[in-house]
Length: 136
Image (cartoon, rainbow, N blue to C red; front, side, top):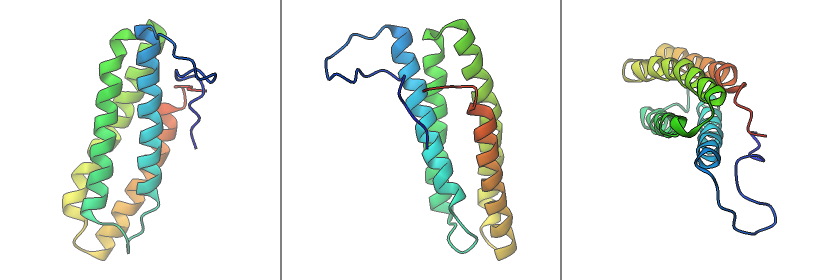
């Protein structure tokens, strides 16, 4: 899974004051990690286990995480901001595509299979979009 080593908290247990950029970085890393968790949950679904509620809950969590990342962008360095913007835009389009399929795809078994395939494609999109956002 995703490591969050460089995302903020001191390992010695002492409280540290974070700069706005460090806080933004921590927000981005936490959101990236949660998106990874949500994608893992979605890709574990099969045509037999996929439900509208299950997919919708994960997609809503991903949308919140993308919003958190977007909100944090202003406090990031320009290079990091560019990376986050690019990843956010690329992955957001994949999430929107999946969301549009949820309402129409869960009625027939062949449509459920197609949705599961699309969710697996979302994993590929996640890996491609967020690979440059190193949080180690």
